[in-house]
Image (tube, rainbow, N blue to C red):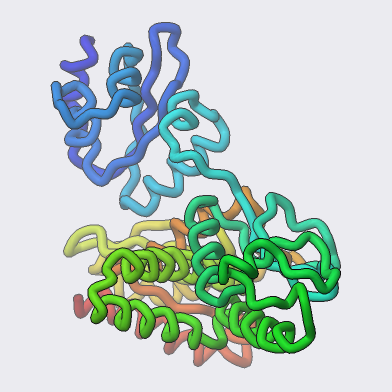
Length: 359
C-alpha cells in the first residue's frame, strides 16, 4: 500500500509512530494525541516545515504505529523507544542539549558557582541534572551579574580581578569585607536552589520593575530573561525532588464516559496499567486495592539515590502528567500498604474513584 494511502487508514487516537527509510530502518520515532492528523502532516506541503523536517520527509518510505489508550502512554513509549532504538533523525532534530549540573565548591578560600557535566566529586554540592545547558548558563550568568559575584580571578591573592574594575565583582578577591557580603549572597543562591528561600527572585523582580519605570527596557528585558531561566530551573528541581521521593502513586484517567484507566507508578516507571468499566465501580474498589498492595509491596525499593541522566526525561513526563488536568492521583505511603492502615487506604481509593465518577 502506498504510504499516503496508508495514512488515510490511521486511527484518530493516541499512539507512537515509527518512520522507516528505504532499507526498512527506523529513522524517527514520534508520539501523537491524534495519530492520523500528526502523521498526515508529514505528507502535506507546508512552508512552515523546517529543513530537518523536509529532509526527514524525503527519507520516509514506510511507517509503523503502536496505539495507546492515552497521550501520557504515548509520551512514555516514545521516550522508551528513542532510548532503545536511537533513531538518527531524533538525534538530529533535538535541540543541542547535554545533561549538566550546577556545582558549588570551595576554590581559593570561598565557594564557587559553576557548570559541569558530572557529579562525581564528593566535596562539592550539586543540583541537577538539567537537560538545557543554555537555560542553566543564562540563569547563573544573570545571578552572578546581578549579585556582582562574577570574580574573574583564578586564585585569591588579594589583588583585584578584571571584573572588579568593570563593576561585576564585589571584591572578594581583595579582602575580607567583601567576602562577608559574598557569602551572604551565596547563601541566598543556595537557598533558592534548595527551594527554601525565594528572596533572590523578589529582588530581581523589583529591579526589573525599577528599570522598566526608568524606561530602561533593555536592562529590564535582561532581568526578565534571567527570571524566566531561573523559573525553568526551579521547575526542574521540583521534578527531581518529586522523583527522588520514590513515591507510590496511583493514578486514574478518564478514557470515555464508561471507562477509566488505572496507572501505578513508582519513581519514573509505570509498574501497572489496566482499564476498568464505570459500571464496575461498586465492586472494583477491592480489586484496585489488591492490585495496589501487591504491586507496590513486590516492587523494588532500592536505597534512595539521585536521579540519573537516563531517568530525567521519563521523570519529567510523569511529573507534567500528574500536574496536568487529565488525571487524578494519590500518593500511597509505605504505612498505608500495611494491614493496620487498610481502612485509610480504602478511603483514599474511594475518594480517587469518586473524583472520576463526579467529573
